[in-house]
Image 1: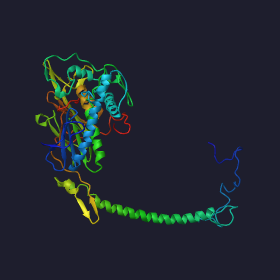
Image 2: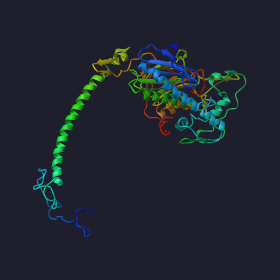
Image 3: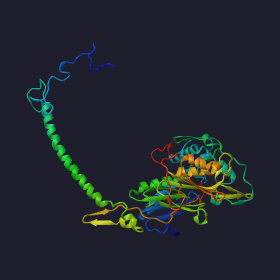
Image 4: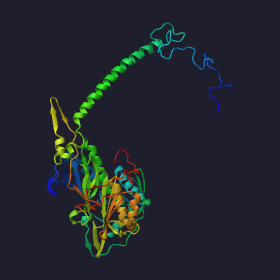
Length: 353
Length: 147
């Protein structure tokens, strides 16, 4: 792949711009930009749809950032944290994001818990990841187990937040963002074609896929070149997401920490799996499932089997395990189970926001 | 179970009801004839005229037959026109998509005819190389949570 550096859009209030990326096929168009603390990629066909859809995806990502980023002082969720305990009337968009996080926590029996905000801060993940000092010498603060998702109540747009609870929607927010983006892109397209949105490797697709599905590399890290366990699969619809303890890791007093926190202990998950990829009907489902599987540790395979999701797990020892119909060979299609576990009970008044 | 047809002491027969004819009305006509002999109007309606139910029924049936014929003709013509349009507008599935690179562009070429332009729906392209990697979220310039 090659980035041309062509600036396509300044984005909604962000200095970052989209860069056109060549992938060797004239029938699709690909563009990248920084968003939500990671890299967003938009892939569309026919290629002439790209300029119009960049603006649509930009708008969705900017809205999600304004609603749910705990690293922006001016975000809605930061305002809640600054206000402390209380009941708040929140925007429909944040209500959807929190509702999906709570639904994911319920579905995963608390393995993916949005109340780990304070635990992450105590570990040192208290700012943009790029701004974290990766080699600080002082040890992290004492671990803070999550107060639990059941302490938070959401009734429509009314959110009740107990004292001391800080939300981190990292287990579902990128998936939600990808879902929103492809939905908005297809709604704006009004013509035949397909769209893929990736937010840091959490991928949602919509519309008509290329023949045999969207070709996607599943890897043991964000760069397939550095991954010894990369596999090419084909995604006909739905979504695929990957969680890995090899990403977003840092050191405190020589101790290696990462961002996938076990809510029960407030410490980085220490199970046998370092990377889990799962496919689902929606990216929020896949995103939550992979986080839950990493946290579940020894119980990951059983939990994924119960959830009925195709998944690929890479162990810390390099062992690769494919479950639920995940293709064993390169180039195989990923089976997508129907239905969503996290969108079902979420109130969505008047659309998405 | 009670027989609904059994007359009980609390049942009152409606005027004109004929017990012997088995609940049939007093006026009868052959089932294969649309109009009752001597007209349709009940006693008291006077001579046949536009206000007679029979008149309206007779004329209504003729109008309905006429309207049905025109409707059927219009439907047939509409279906034929739509089928013809779709046959030209939609490319056959799996024909152009198997041509490899550039197939989507070719399928989307506009076909210009005198007086109008028809744009064909594009067919799905063939994409061999991976377009994205799912491998956990690497950090970019900004921040944010993620897994």
